[in-house]
Length: 312
Image 1 (cartoon, rainbow, N blue to C red):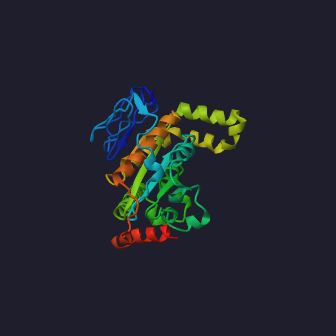
Image 2 (image 1 turned 135 degrees about the vertical axis):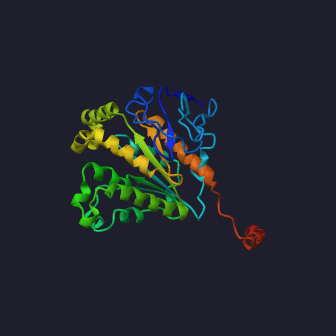
Image 3 (image 1 turned 90 degrees about the horizontal axis):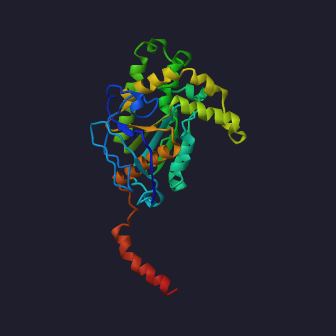
């Protein structure tokens, strides 16, 4: 099993507020601040685990395992009937969320994993509250759901472009407290999900501005990737600084003990995919899913059924 070096990269999870910003040259280019680690996250395997200590900033490098000792957990485990996992993925354009989702879910049984993508709200969705379309797509108990973007768009894109002013909201709700109220509503909603057995994994893929430029240029220059290009990405890139501020405010206000944010450096695709896989794997370990067991009366009949088949 080979491990790869990834100098200068930081992996952190957040459960409360961002600590004072540090200079970006100290870790990931374009990184907007240090984050507290919500829990122990084991990243290295080949050369010893690199484990974050709760309540402090930790830097996970230089080793990230290319494989997992118990990777078959992702292949075989079935979730308990009382729980479900929902993974929310947010990021800037070209950060690699589609590739990350494809990579991470490739080891899951497709019968128990559902991926949902959320674009701009339809007219029907705008006729409802902004959490309506999210609630309709939540995973049933015993399954894993992955959201390609989510309700957080309502405090990201909506905030950058002031979209609530164009939505069907009562005018008395369009006040300076609108965003503070939305953060509270999201926290209340996620607490409700937590209390009803939904385990939330919130991933933010953090891409540097220079790397985004490279990826968009590749989409323009490579005929095989032309289909990925959208002129709208260039328009959104003009708002880069504002998006960074909005991302930070979002994480500061919606990272909780029951629904922490995991901020994953995304300039190296393999590294981001490995970390997201590790986060999901460790979540499954904590849940400790087991195959269903038969009731005792049915277990006692198994020997009888075996005898019937053997005598057939």
